[in-house]
Amino acid sequence: MQFVQPTLADRQLFLDWAAVENWRVPEREQQLFQGYWRPYFFALRTAGTVQGFVSAVSYRESGWIGNLLVDPERRGHGYGSALFDFALDFLRQRNLKRIWLTASLSGRPIYQRRGFVSIDRVERWQGNGLGISELEKRELQTELIELDRNCWGESRAHLLSDLVADGDICRSGETFGLLQPGGAGWQLGPWLSPNKCPLENRLLLTEALAKTPAGRPLIVDALVSAKVTPLLRNTDFFLTGSNELMCLSEAPVISLDGVFALASLGSIG
Image (cartoon, rainbow, N blue to C red; front, side, top):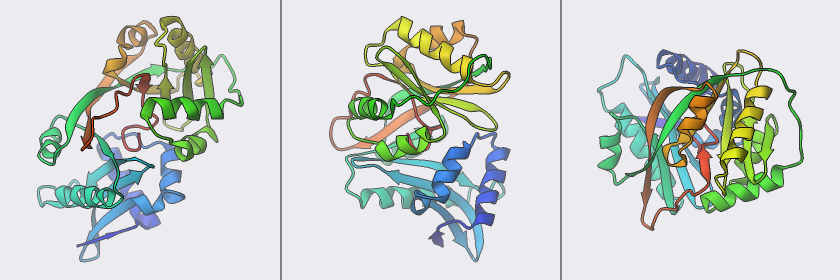
């Protein structure tokens, strides 16, 4: 049993398996795991055959486990547990304060047995772009990174800088959101609102929908604690799924106050 960096052929296999599971894998995330974050994406091989994948990304004080995927025809052989335990050990060696993940209902007991606790719930909402406004390259990266640091309790500057390179920062007052283009669907995240102003959040969501191409899905992975369900429903978003946001931490977990939506689709925060 070997844990190795995937080849290009392996990455296509991951995408094929993800399609079977109806996973959305953002194009920018794929690029990150082929470039700067290549050392954080792993394939499990046995006798030369890939059995599964997992990612384990670390920031300054926290890490994220994601992209845990096993060959659909080889499940039930312990590969999923082996991949998860490898990722957990990989991050523990970095002496991080917290390790995060999002868990399905079936996966939650597995993570609970390893000490993870539920912190929040992430709901995936989907709307349809209107295509009535153009993207703007506004110089708000510094403000977004600082706000994200205040909300998460640490800097995630490299992640946000990479995402901003292809995205568009939306702003309404003190509320910020990063609109991320993508072929299969666009995403709004991170969505950060320290004052939780209803008007600011409505204006920001309206701006994101207006800039998303007409008919193109706009995905939001919103925290239930943000209480934006009425706003999303009133702007014609519909719920497509949900997962538990879980954390392994020896110290009290940060409150995530002001975090409305994640920057990724569950795998890197």
